[in-house]
Image 1 (cartoon, helix red, strand yellow):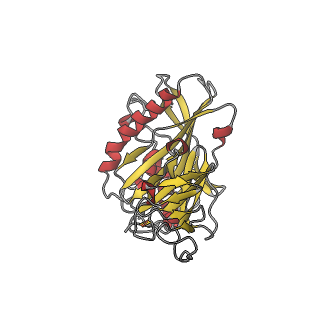
Image 2 (cartoon, rainbow, N blue to C red):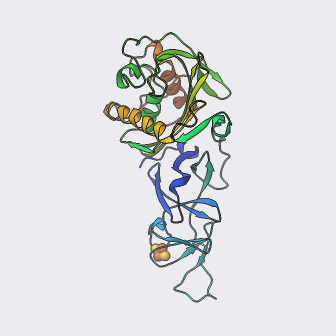
Image 3 (cartoon, helix red, strand yellow):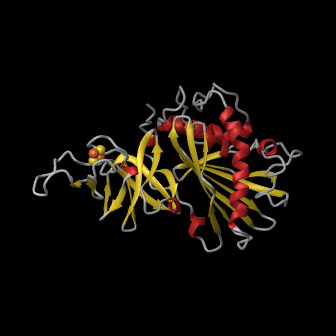
Length: 335
Ligand code: FES
């Protein structure tokens, strides 16, 4: 079974806040079934399994601040303690073992993040900082959640790949006459990798305004990255926080925040649909890649200068001990 020990300690995006209503919601995280539910404005994440007979709690309902199992009605409070077993008299003690497994859960940037390490276990890295979300000059929309039949690192690396724009996204992001990528470096700064600004002749957002744009990629966590595109002629900035949920080894869901400091009145749907077009163009390519898992052995595929962000990503996954691929990367802080 796929359950990467390193990724289990990461905050992983599991849903947008708006997708969780009054009823419990089932999600899958690293092959683990997880149920999300709301109690008094807070979101809780439990293993989606009742200890009595293994039914999915996500098929139940929320009542009196408890999640109620759909099979025999056992009620679990927000700490996972079973508070009611309807089949026994109220004065009979509830077995101590009658508990649900509680995972850490946070709601940030309009997204729900889960950490499979149980509550009270070792400290988590902070959630990635994305300043545009609350910045008054920016407007941020949530891209449509999108699932690919691909390993999460392959999906993230595609987001970090500047070379494919003129091919996979010809006419929408990249221009076929401008395929050369200037040399750049990737540096280790503030506990993550950051690329130099990479000059690209591109259309930042599919509006048909071709211009010289400067791309900066940041690899924030094993499945979270960020991209900033700046047009210095107009001071327009287009940013994205790209966060991938590894549902299964070869099934991943992308959540993304898309921000801009211009055209604030343009309908959100324009940016959501544009991002959907882009990710659909990527999907067939990423799902076709072999091996399916990202090779962390740097000799396994051929790398060129424009691939420096990808090289940094592979090295970092190796350093962190993420178990995708067959080998670990070598340590380097400047790529
Ligand atoms: Fe949940 Fe019986 S399986 S109460």
